[in-house]
Length: 510
Ligand code: MN
Image (cartoon, rainbow, N blue to C red; front, side, top):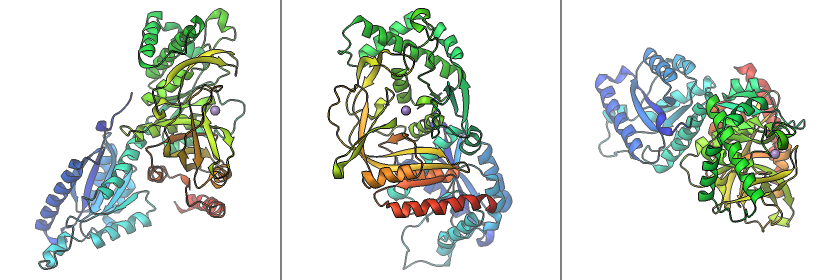
């Protein structure tokens, strides 16, 4: 189910023409090979770059873009114009390409060889104007793309390409993503709902309703011996010293059975994420019939998130899909990501902050230390009972949180920079949590998020920078509002008003 980056590659296409003679193109081909080999050897790029030759005519551009479009390994194209590549010949190829596109403005030669430079050298190092011609046609066509400017050996340049590669891979992953919605949206919540048809057209993923009676078919098929084995695994991984009594051990056993049930369901349906509903957990008289979960599958959700399955609570399918995308983009990065909810406010002047938690479902990838597996009473929803959960606090430090909301005529990605700080102990609230100060401060940051219509749920990562979200919004063609240390309420409101007009006119332009 989990695709790795080595299942994917990006293509590198060099724009040229035959005006300067075949010999020049042969030399450019050699330069391109050396550049791509150097980029792959840099250790900075998570995906392999595959050089696909020079494109010297409209037919050649259309041919290579058609092949890129058809190849499931190819998740995006990097285009570089070593010289003047008349951009009319790129029109049909760019119309054909729907995969992510990166325009690299670079040059084979680093510094001008002042003493020796002649016209032959110029013919091989003309991206200074070649890339402008290409940039013009992308602008003229309103073609979504990322522009990266810099020398191809510079780690900074490669860093921008690396971010785009991760986003392009996650975009490819989302195009066949299936999210299982177990039960419906809860309690008439508006912000977590939206247009699932538009989501599939615009963002790629598909959301399927799963009635709990379907879940029960998987639940009934779980063998007790498999549950025992998973409980033994929990005991070897986690600190379970808090669980002293038999009823607590029974709760852990039930949590393990819920995890095996959800895992079997997800694997059987080929799904990459799921949502739950704490009012829809099987038979109402589960204590008598045994047909259902004894409480929300909190521990299962925590552990499945850590493996890369998307999760959204209370039917929040947009958060489930976004979590999967964030997890996929940050594979191999060290600090972790999680689904989180704005829980309660802590007013403390300049250090005012928001406690982030959930009833149970916070991903242990963000934990600052080994999580504890604990059992406590949970009295919300249709079940009021003891239940298992991983308890921890998050690491401290800077991170970025994001959400997608449906504005009716567009999806809006709201992105907020935050700083996680150390919380005080919460002896009476035994759940996983983080405590953060939104940028630029609590007053402006929380205010902007609320004015933008952002959710109480969001997907947080320490490893992501706003550049990831800029690339994602560009590829998806959706609005992005970014709240950072430079945000002011006045400018933020102006940006939202301008965007309102832009998205009304955008469809007319296309
Ligand atoms: Mn919630």
